[in-house]
Length: 286
Image (cartoon, rainbow, N blue to C red; front, side, top):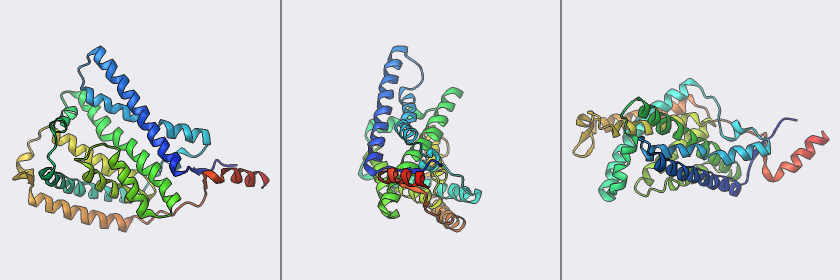
């Protein structure tokens, strides 16, 4: 008898997300205590991001207890190279658009000083800080968040609600709210919508991970006070030519993505958690 692909209840999934946050928070507190004692030179804020690696622990534990396929549960599936290329094109264009959207929102809701200084935690001063920033902010954090929200939570909503649109909207909303940042909630929600769409269409977290990683990578690059600001900005906004190129890139990338990416079929060999006993009984009698 093969291990079934088990879909937990929505309230169970929410509970695992909350437990994951509690695990990450506990690790953050422990790291902060040790940093205060050791007086390490590396930025405290950046090291606290490492705590995000502990977010999936409750999910991994639950999957082990249920003996379900963890890779399927988290949507860890390979996709075609053309799909990944299309995802890169979409990501570049959407990153430009979100940059301008962020500037427009800040006109209405200026960032408080403590958030303006958040870029300091992504400063690269030597090769060790470069490895830490790239490893955590650009790679680890996007991967963990995609596994949690697009791979785990949204997939459960799709099976439980039988409504892809509602599932993508809800998972993107939870993703935005979980960042606890009202000044960036619109930008994060917009990204969550497109990441959710990509994950649903491919039944894989890799296209949405690419979008997430490129967006974070751009934030890291910009925080280094790069000389590109001279031609990138125009009166406090993204240069209209660059913005137009970004919109065109996004449009062509989405068309390419849809063309080369057929909608992944919804798997039928899954077992809802409440039907698990019946599944084992039926399989035993066969």
